[in-house]
Image (cartoon, rainbow, N blue to C red):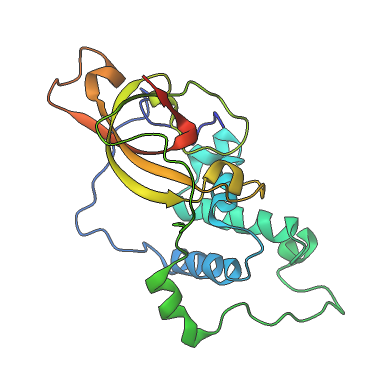
Length: 219
C-alpha cells in the first residue's frame, strides 16, 4: 500500500544518524517489546507479513513520531485484539477480565533459543513456473495495491536486470491478508542508480532489490 512507511527515495526526511557501537536495545522496554511479539507470534494467529502490514496501518503522523519498537508495541496490541486473544479493555486496564480463561503459553523458555536461531523460513520446495532467468532485462510493474506489498514505489515502472535467482518463497502480498502463500520465484534485481534517481546519481552505482515474479514483467 502507498503510505508513509514507504520512505525510499523521498526527499526532506533528514539525514540517517549513524550510532557507533549501537546496542541491540536502547532500553529494557524495547527488549520486552521484542520478546512479547516473538512469544505471541509463536501461536501462529498471524504471520510475519500480516504483522508488517499492521504497522503500515498506523496513521502517518503517529508513524513518524514513533520509534521502531513503539511501532512493535502498537502492532502487537492491535493484533491481540483483532485475533480475540485479549480485549481492548484488558489492554487499557493492564489486567485480564474477571473470569477470563487462562491460556497456555505458545512457547516455553527452553524453546526460545531454537526459535531465534532458525526463525520461520519463507522458502518453499514446490514446483512453480520460473518466469525469468539471470541476465534477463525486466521492468518492475507500475502497480499501486491497496494492501501489503514489498514492491517499493521508487522502483515501479523502472528497468532492471535479473542478477540472481533465490528460489521459491512465500508471496507477502497474499500471505499478509491470509489469502494463501502463493509461493513464487524470488530474484535479486539490479537497477542502475540513474534509472531510479536520474542523471544526478552516480553512473557507477546500482541498487539490488529482491522481487517476486508478480512484481516483474519482461522488458
